[in-house]
Image 1 (cartoon, rainbow, N blue to C red):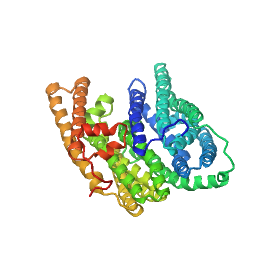
Image 2 (cartoon, one colour):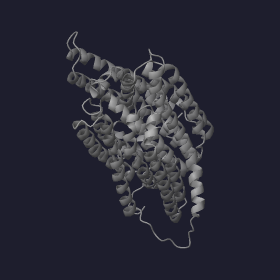
Image 3 (cartoon, rainbow, N blue to C red):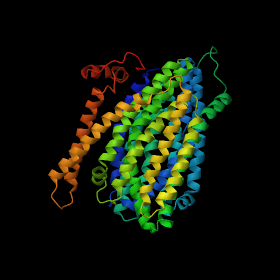
Length: 548
C-alpha cells in the first residue's frame, strides 16, 4: 500500500472512534462556549443553528453517497488488483465532486438572504454566506477521504477530522468572541463563529492532499492493465452515488423543512412571539448538539463496514458479509445504547451544567432526544450495510416514510401551545423508529443470514438497564448529600454529582458487558491490542461467527 498500512474493518473503526473522542472534545470546546449568554446565547445560537442546518442540507446534496460510492468502487478495484483503475477512479471522482461543490457554493452565496428568509430567520443570512465556501472545500476533501477508506486506511480521515475541528475551534471561537465583545450584534457574531467551519475545512483539505501525495503517489502503469474509460467511471460513480445521495438528501430536506416548520408553528399555531420562538428553537439546537454525540461514534464504523462488505461480496463470500453486518449492528448497539440511556437518565444535570442559565425546557428536550439517538445510530448502520450490498435504493423508501412521520407528528405537536418545542424530539423518535423497522425488513431480504435481534439488542439492553439504574441512584444520592434543602443546587456540586454518576455508569456497563458475554474474544481480536485485553478480562470465545 505504498507505505500506508491497511487495517481490517473494526481495526480501522477503532482508530476512527478513538479519534472521534478527541474530535468531539474539541467540538464541545467550540460549540459549548458559543451557547454562553455572553457570546451568542439562546437567540444567537438559533441563527447559528439555522445556518448550519442549511449548510448540512446542501452539503448532503453535494457529497452524501459519493464518498461511499468512491470507497466501494476503489475497494472492488483494489480487491481485483487493478491499481491503474484505482488511480483513475480517484481523479474522476475528484473532478466530479469539485464541480458539484463549486455549484452549490455559488448557490449559497447568491441566495443566502432568500434562504434565511425561507427559514424564518433573516439574521442568519451572514452565517449562511460565511459557510458557503466550505461546501466546495469539503466536496474536494471527501474525494481524498473516500479514496483512503476504499484502500482500507482510516488514519488520514481520522487525523484530518482533528485538523478540521482544531481549525474550527481556533478561528470560529476567536472571531465570535471578538465580535461579541465589540458589540457588533448577534448576527455578525454567529457569522464569525461559523466561519471557523470554513477555515477548518480548508486546513483538512490541505492535510489530505499532502497525505495522498506522500503515501499514494500517482504512477505510470504499463499496457498490461487498461483502466475503464472516464465516461464509464463517471456513469458508475453516479449510478451508485445518486441513490445514496437522494436518500440522505430526502432526510436532510425533511429535517430542514422540519426546522422551518418548528419556528413557524411555534409562532403561528402555538402563539409564541418571534423572540420567544427563537429562544425555544435555540434551546432545541443546544440539545441537538448533545443528541448528535452518539452518532459521531457510529459514523467511523459505517465508513469501515462499506468496503469490508463490498470486498466480501466481490469475492462471493456471502457468509462473511452477513457476519460483518451482524457484528457491526451489535457493536453499534453496544456503543449507541448506553449513550442514549445516559442522556435520558442524566439529561437534567448534563444540560444544566453545560448550558447553565439556559431555558428550562432543555433537559426535557435532551431526555427525549436520548431515546431518538439510539434509533438514529442503528438506522445509520442499517443504511451503510444496505449501501455496501448494492441496495442503495432501499434506504430511500425507509427515509421517506420516516420523514413523513416526523413532519406529521411535529405539525400536530409543535403547534400545540402546551407541548410546543417538546413535540420536535417526539417526532424524531417516531421518525427514526420507523426507519429502523423498515431497514431491518430490507436487511432480512438482502443478506444471506438475517441479523438476529436477540444477539444485536438483547445483551446490550440488559447491561444498559443496570447501568442506567446505577447512574440514576448515584446522582440522586450525591445530589441530596451535596445540596441544601429548599435551595437550588449550584453548578459545581451538580457537576461533581454528574461526573460521579457518569463514572459509575461506565464502570457498571463495562462489568455488565463482560459478565453477560455481550463482547467476545472474537470481537476484541479485531481491534488494536484487543486480544491482550480480552485475555485480561477472561472473555469467552463463541467458536464461530454466528453462535446459536
